[in-house]
Image (cartoon, rainbow, N blue to C red):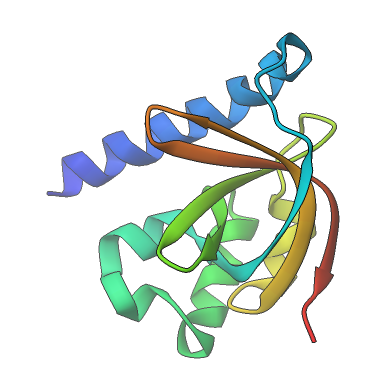
Length: 125
């Protein structure tokens, strides 16, 4: 199980680093606004429901600041997050871990994976 999680996190990291590079080729949609919880992908996938919410905020902040993948959870869907300038979203989202945010950006999907390249983020009311 542990090897599967590490492999998935590696795949996610690879996807984040390469997904934005294809935006200029028409892979992205028009900008959309998504509202959901900022989650660290590793804990969400490996700890289930205990990897979500306010009770997990401190751990999520630490994981996101440490460079693990970050996503926005909207309903039952995860959107991996990167910034519109093709950089990691960790610095912008770490202090918002376990908070509900509204992010605006272009959404891409391939092979069941979703990514949002964020142009604007704010804490949801």
